[in-house]
Length: 133
Image (tube, rainbow, N blue to C red):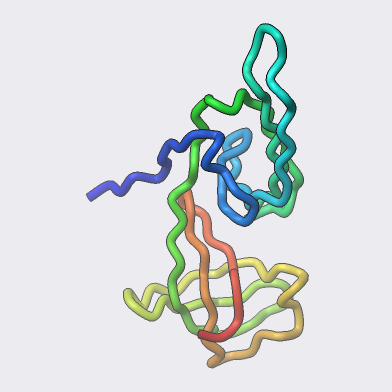
């Protein structure tokens, strides 16, 4: 069974803290600027987002009535099996699948074997989102 990876939403529905797809990268929205409608056009929206997997800053500029792609993000509970350098071996709490994921700077030094974490999964990629349940 193939699950839907991307949904569509109106630019007007985009809010700070939500997720959008900018240049094919799943990003968390950190700022939105709206320009006034002009004489011959609609209001434009400038959405600034930070990539949830790579941390890169991206900008999306579209009319307010346009559609935008929204990634489907799943949050899962997992347990740290081991930590080695800047990567951790994680076991999914539901499927018991074991995989390796990079440790973001904000979690460096805070992980150890046995700790429960939350993993964000979107578009075939995974990232550590928070420590603890």
